[in-house]
Image (cartoon, rainbow, N blue to C red):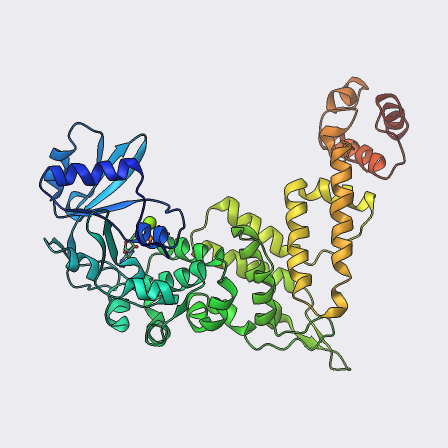
Length: 445
Ligand code: ATP
Ligand code: MG
């Protein structure tokens, strides 16, 4: 692990300016953690004993943005990038498990570090002073441990979101959660009910896209099911089918692990089989079936994405992929053109990715389907590369051509165009103007 941190010039400038003005300044929190792990920090936060008013004075020659003066954060904009400078602070009592009832400034860096959530997030650094690590952050970083600063139950009761943040860091860093912290996550998880959907969404999406996601969800399923009770029936739900070697929840976790870190795809895998327990039936041989489960999974997906206030585009896409996750693939040109027309290129390839993850989490006898998926992808790429016709806008005739033939405007015109497209996809007619017009004349008469 690194001992020294190389600061970006602008951050060094901020620390120097604070020092020249007679104040302390340190980088703090996530950027210290990430820099020590040799990861590029997403942003560099500075903490100081200078009060917000003094900060505005010190940086008066530069553009500054005050982010809630009473919260003590001033952002200095350097080369178009804001660097957030926050005055050392302590938080008062939390009455509602999510907002401190008061925030007061302090002159003690240690006190500021003590209010932070996890030891690995509670370190400060200055190139001259070196690392300030009051709570064993560096040891936990070395051993890959997530541990709250202070008593975990108390810290989660102050702000329930920390439970989910802890899982998120465990997933992102592939760290393990200390037993006491983990036990408190479990016992306090109902506190997550007090947290705004937007904050939950932000942390949960980071967890879902993290490298260690599946393991974290498996080991902390209690927390996940308290967030999403709709998913609980999947746990230990046996499938009794030769196509599956895992229960529904294990299958889901394996499928997520096989999925690239893309929010839409990972969310789809989390939800794709959530409707299975509701529709389970057994035949005379005792084999399990899940008729129409995709529809039920879609209803659950709609409910969960709405509750998390996800943006419409993402949630609609997730619901569409869940709805069609069990589409039967046909590695055949005509069928693929119809699907490209029906779903569009992007969704079609996403559906193939969903099939891949789903298959990789099924039993050995399903694995030949991987080849079918590859074949479908190859055929689709070929169709696209050759700019073959699979949608109305590729057709060699358009609405105007039909109007010119005397066909009145209206829904019938659209139907005729779609019939032409179907004929072209089926190879019944070449995608050329004259043959298409001839076909139209025949149909119209
Ligand atoms: P990321 O790399 O995702 O930004 P981060 O650790 O920087 O991770 P932020 O949400 O940017 O996370 O928060 C910055 C720092 O503020 C954290 O490292 C932590 O010290 C502190 N912090 C953030 N949220 C909380 C919280 N809910 N409770 C206590 N401390 C927090
Ligand atoms: Mg951050």
